[in-house]
Image 1: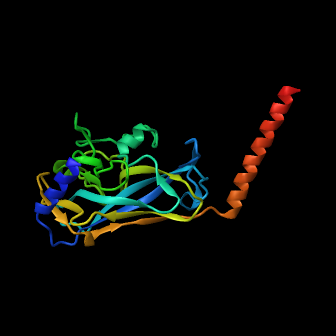
Image 2: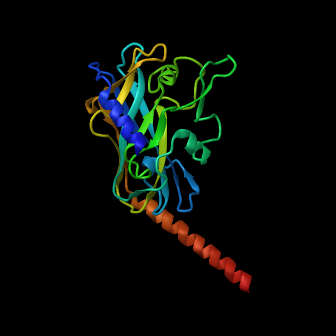
Image 3: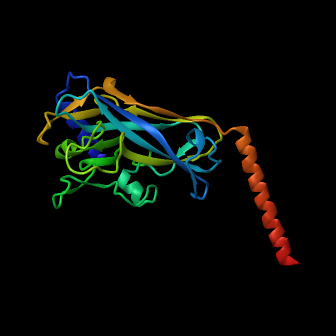
Length: 262
């Protein structure tokens, strides 16, 4: 909570730019799991056939466009809103934490980057100023804040095409991966995942940041785009197949038990 208050106060007192730089946060479906968290892989139609009480993984990716020369992404504060039939399970996870928990392959690292390429040393952490849910409830996907340090922002150029600005490529990709979360399917209904900015000045950039010492500058919600992702209800045919598979499994188990008794 203290972190949230400090950032909000800082945003209020930084200059507001008149430029038209834009930030976009987009939810992306990754994979599904059954009720025991066994992976079902990436299912069609944003996980539409994920079974009841199963789980879906989504990630959020960042695009930063129409920036001034030497302007870099600094911070964003936003909420993730779940539609009907979806319940938060994991809370927000930064990429490195999600990787450590097994939701991404163990390499290459999603937590670190090489800031100077072939030169010795230079290993740095992503999101040095914070990446987490800083609301009153730290696990409700509300008041999520991601924030880069100014030198990190100049080096990585998060959300920009052709990044990074220096050093080696990292594993966050393009658009830039900023975090992920797991939800449970509690009803087989059509639903959605939506991203909305917090009120006020929900994001900011570093202006004149060529040397990594730029001016933190806040922007209004009008230049923030939060995406929405539809999660359709399962097709009736997929429900029949799932029921058939479950029935066949019960029959096979019963046959084996009967055989064991005879």
